[in-house]
Length: 228
Image 1 (spheres, rainbow, N blue to C red):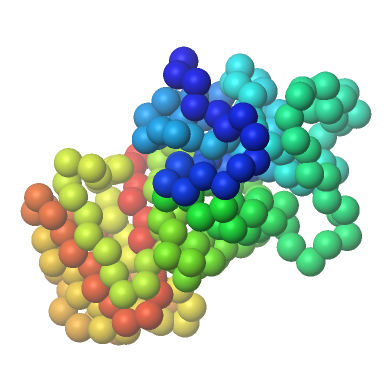
Image 2 (cartoon, one colour; image 1 turned 45 degrees about the vertical axis):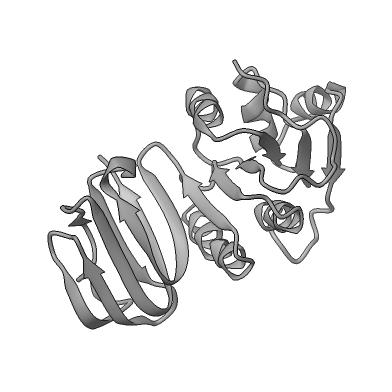
């Protein structure tokens, strides 16, 4: 496996940062995303996600969280690693994932990939998707990834290339109550100046048919690429 982890906490513009939280993510998926990411790569454990990284046979450069979801044995395992551990108090005004994301954004990476942010906790999944807006506002490309989905929040739109497609389906959802002036070109179901409310499913499960597709909108939208 290529060595791409950061040896210290020095600021390094242009890196790819991978944040691994405690949701559903397999060791194999962590390794695959790490190996396929454009180097240099910074690997960060978020609370129980630190254990998931260790179970993948890897060592993060930093661990962040209140660690209330790990056992005493697992906490000792984390402490025994020679990495920087930022232990947060449980009584705080943000989630461990938000704290880690804001830390990463402050370091100005080129790209942030968030793993372990989806799973059985729907509240955590929705919250994590909402957090992506912070990266969009900071001008940093950020995604939530799992085995079946790649999620981002865009402002004004984005372009998708078929050769880089994550899956078969592309859905555009409002970030908030509605998305306005939505255009989708290069898709099986094109859109022309649509207003889409959050309570309808009109823009779910579209498909990219051209070599390049374009999504344009006013304000913010959630773009989800999915595969079964």
